[in-house]
Amino acid sequence: MKIGVNGKSFYEIDSLEKVLNPVPLKGALDREGSLYQWYCESDSKTTTIWANFHGSDPNRELVEINVRPAVFFPKKTGINYITVSGFILSQAATDWAPPTADQTGLIGPNWSKGWIIENNTINHSKCSGITLGKERSTGQNYSSEYNIKNGHISQLEVVFNGLKNGWSKENVGSHIVRNNTISYCEKTGILGNLGAVFSQIYNNHIYNIHIKRQWGGFDMAGIKFHAPIDVLIKDNCIHNTFKGIWIDWQAQGIRITGNLFYDNSWMDLHMEVSHGPHIVDNNCFLSDLNLWNMAVGSAYVHNLFTGQVCKGVENERFTPYHYPHSTKVAGLMTIQGGDDRYINNVFIKTPAPPYDVFEKANRPKREEGTMDFGLGMYDLYPAVLPDSGVPVSEMSKVKLPVNAENNLYLNGAVAYKKGVNEVVDRNAEIDIRIEEKEDGIYLILKTSEDFAGVESRMINSFDFGEAVVPEAVFDNPDGTAVLFHNDYFNASRQENRNEAGPFAIFSMGENLLKLWPK
Image (cartoon, rainbow, N blue to C red):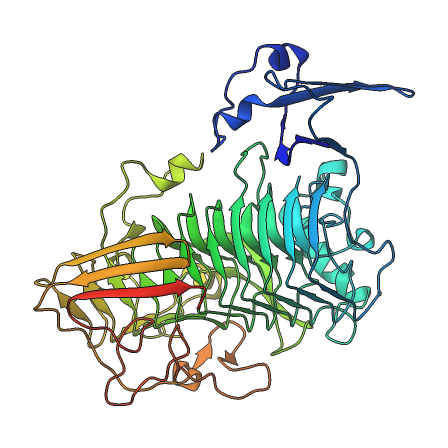
């Protein structure tokens, strides 16, 4: 159930006493708005609702009580090739939709193929806005229901159940989600486990996600995907969310390019327990924590990082990897850390927030030396693959190599000691800020006169070699090399002036760049 007045969503609480004497809810970003609370009791015949309207007359105002589980969502699976364009889709009492359960959203294809969801305004979902995820038959919260296997094992079972139920390019995925405005969803803007494979997500504006902070658990993000094989996430603007993009498990072949992230309260991008290859290029990461890298086999190219980067490993969870451009599972492996490439990026140290970003998110504080501005936390990682004489029993603990080349570090950002042609500019001072104007979102970036920059050769994805675990090259879904000849604005880079970072032209003095809309 979901209750609102004049388009304003109320907060559900657990007692009538709290409705009668409301106090601001802990964690809610809109403290004053969280005083608008409701509570209900029900039996087999009657549902009684109490709500605090704070002096307004519900008989005169527009009061809505939503019980519908979705706005546009087929009851059957396999309803293919539907286009939903140009609608306002709002106010659904969607259920919690974890990756091991039926994932119903305000709108979604329900385990189908070839949908186009475009040019819509999608908002006020109690849980998720767009879902491209799994359906009920592949698993329905069995780890919680039976309390025998943990969520990791249940998710593995979901993967193999999905394969048994036709999880392939021929049957599922290949959706296009573009040009939508998605906001005020309390779990995710766009969500999907398995069902988003081979899809394109581009030019969406996603903001104000998980701002009530009443949900617990996981998956709260602007975009959250499990198993986004060969998915393109491009040219989206994602801000004022919990996590901007959260990529979890089996992201083989994903490309995240040309996106703008800012004011995301925990982080911009979380890459978790996937083995690659992944390509993350030409993005602007502008929140306090830009990247939590708990994956391997990634290439970070021509990005702007103005916040902290955090590394991690996962030696307990075995997660699948695939044959290239396929849902077929090739094996299972833990996350050792490393096998990453950082090339042609700009790292700018900005003032650290007066809090620990993990503790603020009610998560354990990270170990010393795992997080910093720049790449200094990788200094203990090798630059090449370790010798083959490591015992098999110890292989899961061996750190894979990290390669850094032609990155620029400013304002005290720390370079990786084993990098090649890493430029640390200790003289130039950089001022950087985001400004929201009526016609769009601007980046104001001012350099001192002695700013030198760094230039490098043109590269393509075949220069990265193979991702170690799946033994797969970095390429497009059609097997061709990914070229990095264009920048964030799709302007052409010049061979003789290929600047580090996402902008082809980056000059001394003040730069005023309209980042969104492009």
